[in-house]
Length: 153
Image (cartoon, rainbow, N blue to C red; front, side, top):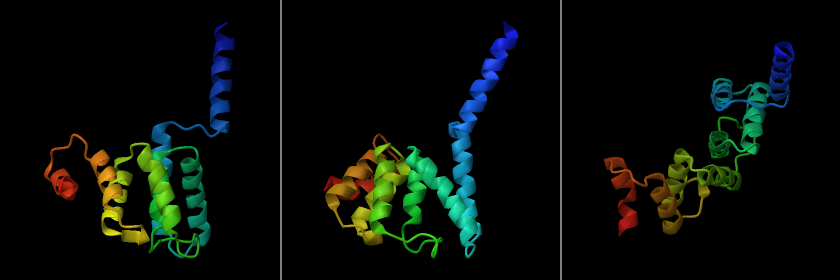
C-alpha cells in the first residue's frame, strides 16, 4: 500500500510539473529571472524574447506580478526595443489586469499615470483617484497622504 501511495504522489508531482504548475515562490523566481534577463541583455533579442515569453505565459495564466511587468515593458522607452513594440494600450491593459487583482504597484503606477497623463495615458482625475485610493486604503503614511491629497479636494 505504501509503495502504491508513493507512486501516486510521484506521478501527481510529475503531472503538475509537466503541466507547468508552479508554486507562487517558483513563479516569483521565474519573473525575477526573466526581468533580469531582459535588463541585462539589451541588444540580445533572442535572450530577451525568451524571457518575455516566460513573463507573458505567467501573465496570461493570471499572475498579477507578471501582468505588471508585461505592462511596464510596453511603456516607452522599453529595454526591449526591437523585440516588442511599445504600446500605451498594451501597457494600460496589462497594468489594469494586475491592478484589478489588487497588485499595489500596478495600482500606484496607474494612479500616477492617470494623474499626470504619463506614458500617453489619458489624464483623468477620476481614474487616478480610484486607483490611488485602492492602493493606499488604510495607509496613514506620509506617502499615502501626499498621493491622496489631490483626491481629497
